[in-house]
Length: 104
Image (cartoon, rainbow, N blue to C red):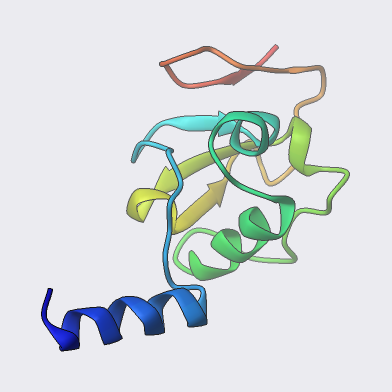
């Protein structure tokens, strides 16, 4: 491997710009699914929310709101759009396996 590639990889790891999430673009996920099965932490979700400035406005979801909220995946998980009017599901958030999750 070339030295410049190694340096770029090292810088990416040090700055936290490496995204190893498993969400698929345009699918919708419950916050609990992102945390439980897709490699996110609550702070990862909040950071990805703040990176998406075209669709998100207002404060990021709180730790309490995340599990019952729906997020649309964009930029291979680097950006998340908080859907459902930027509010948690009124009932439960349902993990729908390989398809988009939904409020139940």
